[in-house]
Image (tube, rainbow, N blue to C red):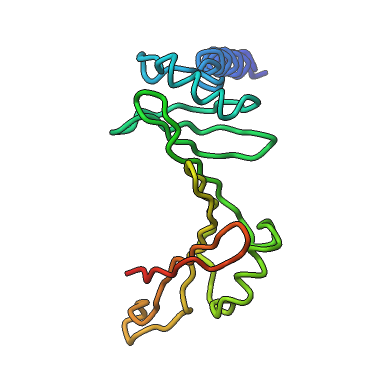
Length: 172
C-alpha cells in the first residue's frame, strides 16, 4: 500500500513557505512612511496630513522634484504630489465612468460637441488655486489599410468644476 507521507510533507513544506512569505510581506502591505530604506521627511508627511487628515497612505514614491503619495480618503484612491520641502503641488483622481462625475461636468461634456467620441480616460486634477476635470477622447476607429489608428484624432477636454469647457488640446 503506497504511503501519503511524502505528499503530506510536501503540503506542510508549502504551507510553511507561504506562511513565512506572507509574514515577510506584511510590512510592505501597510501604510509605510519609507522609500526603500530612506524615510519620507517629517515635514513632507506633516504637510500631507494637514491637507488630508483622514487619509490612509498606501505608498510613498520619491520623484525627481519631490514625492508622490498614493492614498485613500473616504474610500476613494488618489495620487498626491508634494515638493521636497512639503508644499502640496497636485492631487489626481481617476474616474472610471462619466456617471461618477459631478452633474455640472457631465452636463458640460454632453454639450461640448465631443459627446459622441470614445472616452479614453477621466481625471480630476486639483492644484493650489485650480480645480478641473480632464476627459481624454478620440473620434473612433478609423483604420487605414494596415489596420492602424492613423486617422483617429484624440483630444484632452479640460472642464471647470462648474462644467464649463475651459480648453481643448489636440493629442498626437
